[in-house]
Length: 260
Image (cartoon, rainbow, N blue to C red; front, side, top):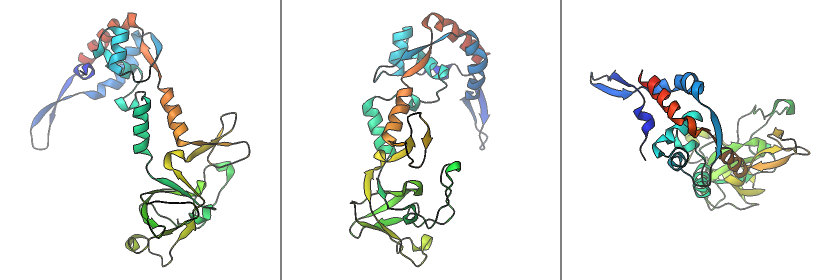
């Protein structure tokens, strides 16, 4: 898929430390063009993406030219293709990579940290003591081991990648391997009260008015990471576009300013 966007950027001469001169594109011109050029001549509307529609397909459908897909990124202020709406398969693969491991929940936040101070008027939690569990360290249930990749005392849990974990097992720090970083003479542990895939973990709590809190409270229901990611992806389905009848004028003005 040709990328005509970059062809419209002026070129600069840049001298490397070894004195070699190279030619590069002046990408910094983009910001001023977005505000001063395109917005002055464009008339926008919105388009609802079908599941799996690529930028070049949309540009061909709207403008009869797939190379004009760069205009979609320009008017929506996107910098890369990862900001485009993902189809369900792509989203699923993305979330699998983004949310590895499992959440191991404890009965109390003090099972995760030594002490906490929490003021509900100043959300979220303020941790005032050292953690019992540390990012990157190895933990074990006596049979399997895994590495701590996230710690969330406000949700009374740690996220562990690797190993096999079950409710009611005891998860224990492995200070022997990590003694050069974390050794304090005491082996820390807690009994697992719940095991969840990382994607199924609670991201925040929300009431019927849409108010969010990081802690559980009366009238607030948990919202997991999968729901958060799905909703964010759906927001990208409706994109801003240049009305087809104005596309030629906008592209001409864009090219004039970029090359001027």
